[in-house]
Structure formats: structure tokens, C-alpha cells
Amino acid sequence: MSDTKPVLDQVDADIDNALERLFSLLRIPSISTDPAYADDCIACADHLVADLNSIGFDASRRKTIGLPMVVAHGGPKPGTGAGPHILFYGHYDVQPPDPLEKWTSGPFEPVVKEGANGKQIVARGSSDDKGQLMTFIEAARAYMAVHGELPIPVTILLEGEEESGSKSVGPFFAENKDELNADVALVCDTGMWDADTPAISTRLRGLVHDEVFITGPSRDLHSGHYGGAAMNPIRVLAKVIASLHDENGRITVPGFYEGVKDLEPEIRAQWDGLGFDEKAFLGDVGLSIPSGEKGRSALELLWAQPTIEVNGINGGYTGVGSKTVIPSLASAKFTFRLVGEQDPAKLLEAFRAHVRALIPADCKVEFSADGGGSPALELPLDSPHLSAAREALKAEWDKDAVLIGMGGSIPIVGDFKRALGMDTLLVGFALEDDAIHSPNEKYNLKSFHKGIRSWVRIIDELAKG
Ligand code: BES
Ligand code: MN
Ligand code: MN
Image (cartoon, rainbow, N blue to C red; front, side):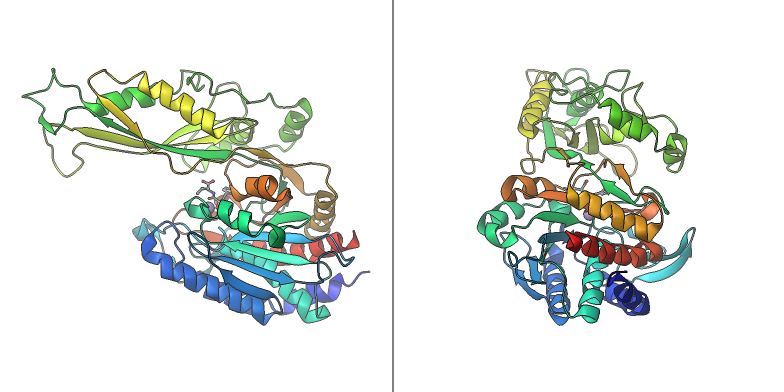
């Protein structure tokens, strides 16, 4: 028996206080997408710095070109024999809570409610990502309370702009390369397979944003006086959007599939073996027919195929009643999810060329991308860190951890690899029904409690070397 048990007992004994600490973090509306909340984001960073310093880390708030990062160091000095050196990452920023009227309690007034799988912590950020990042901090707190120190060198990096494009990460990494360098990055911002089955995510899709603005006439027009002669930019936009997929759900943009690989037979077999319930997955959100390319499983569509989505469209009169108008402008926001070796810059160009070709000669199109985008990522399946995490998760959950893909994106993971040369281990305790980015976001108390215990065990497994 190792020294893990007393630390796990400490976690259990302290769980009510841990919950109270999470609540105080959840009360800070650290919405990074809205500049009106910048002071709250800074207050959130300060709150975390104070907490980390209080448990024995050397923590500070760090300037970036945008919202601050929190960086903390704990455990033995890197390079003194105890290893591996880990960099733990989480993000303290959250998505806006709207629509507010759909919340059954205040988004920044955390409460515990009884739910389908026991008690749930309800608040914006409870799952994405404050509850998840606190699982690691609480594990470190318990470890330090019992043993006085962590067994391995630990650097903690908490970002405040994950939900708004991570624009500070590149410059911050370039300036602090040596300080942030570690043997492996640990990220707690992903999910479990189901409420009883832990998971390690080994693939992330990449992400590219673009916005398209189509101008028709030079001003809004009377749709009777001009209609039939003057082109309507909404009609052009509709044609553009409708042209992106064929009748089988496959993307039609020339060159879009360059870099998309066929799924390896072993991976396909492993995913098929997971017994994913496609009907229930779509049924839970009121749907029944997969929208992606026909003939592919839902998991393949989510984890190994690219998408183009329209996230919003704008144009013309949308107020009460009718207005006979041909608007001058129509626009839409798009995102692409990337897989395999798809190149963000090339995809953006391919998409824009496809759109341009559909614009009538007397209309105009403009684009505005939001950052450069991030490529997809596949993580190694044979690393010692992954094996250590598997051992630890099995011990805590009494069930083998499954290796899964992820439809969402965590752009910083690519920067860990490209800028710092580090692989990442993605272990998280979120559930499908956590409603991240939606009203009534929640995190199961069980995810929180056993998540903390899981990190204690992972730290101990990693320390065994
Ligand atoms: N934690 C999520 C990513 C995620 C989504 C993990 C679903 C597991 C399941 C992350 O905070 C997120 O929302 N990422 C954004 C990135 C974007 C805002 C730059 C995404 O994927 O849309
Ligand atoms: Mn997240
Ligand atoms: Mn998110």
C-alpha cells in the first residue's frame, strides 16, 4: 500500500469545504467573450492566485496581450530527480450565460440540486471548466496537507481566454517557454464515457472561424419597386450555405477533404466496441437522423470527420410584423471542425474560393476570420503517462478507462506540442448532459469528488515513474 490512502481520506474529509471553495470561484462571472466582464476575469485570476499560494504553491497573475494567465509552481524543483514534471492546464473563463430566462437559478449563484445521477452543482462554469480545474487543485491541496509537499514537480497554468479564442497563448508561450516547459501536459477539460466509465481523450478536432459578408444593392431597397431586378444578398447567402453539403451530407468545397485520413481498422473496431447509442445521443436533443455523410457511424462523424457549420446568420428585417425590403447586406458566421492533417489556412482559402465563385458579378463579398485556427490533434496511445493514468482511473472507478475521441476543440493543446514540444494527457470528468455552454450547466458532485480522488491517484502513479 502506498501513501495514497491518507490523501484520499483527506479528500473525503474535506469535500464539503472543497465544494464551498468551488462555489466561491463560480460566483465570479469571468466571461471572457464580453469585454464588460474583464474586471471579473482579473478578479477570478486573483482569487485563484490567492488560493494556490495559500496551499503552498508559488503562484502569480501574469500579464498577457489579453486577459491574465495564472502560473503556479509546486513540488520538488524540476530536474532534481523526482519526476516527471507535469504542467496542469485548465481555463477559468466561462461562456456567457444567456439566454438567462432558461436558467432555473442564477448562473453565478451556484447551488446543489438533486438530479438523475445524484447531486449536481448548477452554475455557469461548474463543468466547463471551473469544476474540472478545481478537481486538480483540490487533489494538490489534499496531497500537500497530508505529506507537506507534492511528490513530483507541478506547474499549473490557468488560462482566461479559452472560450474566446486563446489569442494570448502564442505570445505568452514564446516569452515563457522555459518556465512552462515540462515532461507532459495534463488537461482537465474533457468528459467521461458515461457516468460510471472514465475516459482518456486521445484526439481533438481542430477549429477555424470565418465570417462572410455579402453586399447586394448599395442601400436597402423597396422590394416591390426593385424586386425582380435587384439581387437580394440573402438569396445569395442562402445559395452559398445550401451549396456546402451534397444530398449525402458530404462537404462539397473542392479540396476540403485533403488531409482527412481513413479511420484505422483497429480504431474503428475499438470505437465500435464502445457500444455507442446513436439513437439515444440524438434522441436526447430531439433528433434522430445523423446530419453528416451517410454510411458513417455517429462516433466517426463526431471524432474523425470534418464539419462546416453555420453558427448564425444576419440580414434584412427581423423585427415584429413584415417589411417589404431588399437589404443591402447579409452575413453569416461559420466554423469548421478539422481532423487528421487538414490545414487551417488552406481550408479557409478553399472555403473562400468556393464562396467567391457563387457571388454574382454585381454583388460583393468580404470575409473576416477570427484568428488563424487550430489543426486537429492525435495524441500518442503508448506513452507511460497514459498508462499511469489508466492504472489510476481503474483503481478509482473500478472500471477500465476507455480511449475516446472528442468532437470539440481545445486549441492550446496544439500549442503545447508545437511551441513547447509536449504531449498532453486529456482526462476529464464531464458528462454528456452537463449542458456546457447552455442554460443550467451542471457538474455532478460525483464527478467533482471522484475527479479529485482520480488526480490524487494519477499523481501517485506518475510519481512511481
Ligand atoms: N471544454 C470545451 C471543449 C469540449 C467540448 C470538451 C465538448 C469536451 C466536450 C472547451 O471549453 C470549448 O468549449 N472549446 C471551444 C473552443 C472555442 C471556443 C475556441 C469549442 O470546442 O467550441
Ligand atoms: Mn472547456
Ligand atoms: Mn467551453
